[in-house]
Length: 227
Image (spheres, rainbow, N blue to C red):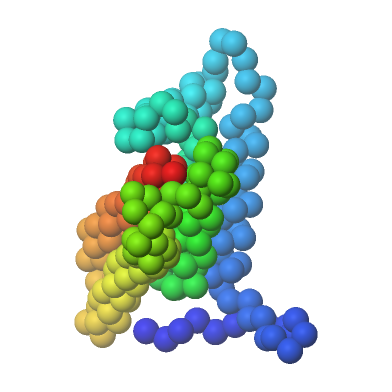
């Protein structure tokens, strides 16, 4: 499986910036999510319409997930968790429409993991104050400081590698199957891959999105309460 080539490039000083298909796909997904969010939250009323009922059900479900996993005191992270989960899920599902998932690219998953990392540390600072945040690195005893720092650094590494590895493997298997089916018969590509897409794109893609969000939530709670 070849690495995607840049659609176009430009220079930022002496640094070459490559715009690859993954970047365009992500931008389209962001715009679609923004458009859907704008449409679904227009003209909210006391007596909800069917559209508003669905929106409220989704929010209630996300709120209950946060409460059941990290507690009621963390409900302020619901918008972040919901946005992150929807974004990762949609990227994982692009294989259903014949588009290679952006999450098979390590730079994409690393960026997502760094966003989660910044959120975890930022939320802990906001919740406890910057003094208590840095004090938490020295608790319960100061000599574990290197271990605590390593533990914090490992979060984006583990998050990015887990999502990247699973999505890359799934995409590789799907592409390998299509290549072999093409040699067998063109018509075979229309039926045989359906159950594979159901598993690798919908089931596995959904599971990976859930795991990514759950680990982010749990780390928000752990780091906030550690300080």
